Length: 232
Ligand SMILES: [Zn+2]
Image 1 (cartoon, rainbow, N blue to C red):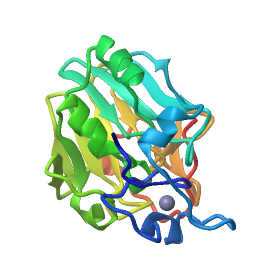
Image 2 (cartoon, protein in one colour):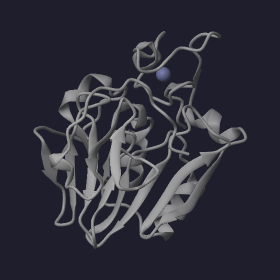
Image 3 (cartoon, rainbow, N blue to C red):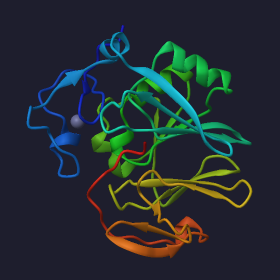
């Protein structure tokens, strides 16, 4: 049984019932005109939602649900040589989705770009018995504090020989990207950094073409942005 409250608008799960969702009352999200609404994993599992897993590119598998829930979050299962790693998170999780991910080799850890993807990460961490790496600058936003979370600090955290977290800020102070060094290198950016259509530059919407796409992430510098778009 899992009836911990989940915000219907943003997908954040909280440790106990409450009247408001700080993520949604924050200026980077919104409370719908119909007011704050809550659900929970048991309710979602009993309704029309199903897990969705699909290839997103070489060694990267998208994880989400359909129909869209909350802000349409999508996680990415990164098939790194050091082990499968879950980048970002989604609120929906059921036995079938667990079985599908397990069939892909399971996961060895989870990291999240920014609080709009925290969702039900504690359920994910407990289900797969793995740590969650979150930047300490965003500690106030986690709705369900748990010992599974390893709060890291500073500009970078080397997770394994091929996976490194980089704190770029931008959207939230703890905004993080994941650098996967395999091959030519891959930057998993959440919506902290976006590749613009010519694929030569990376950008945030308020400051287009701020850095070359082939530069290492630590050399990129960005301004502020306030909106958040679903990944799917
Ligand atoms: Zn919310």
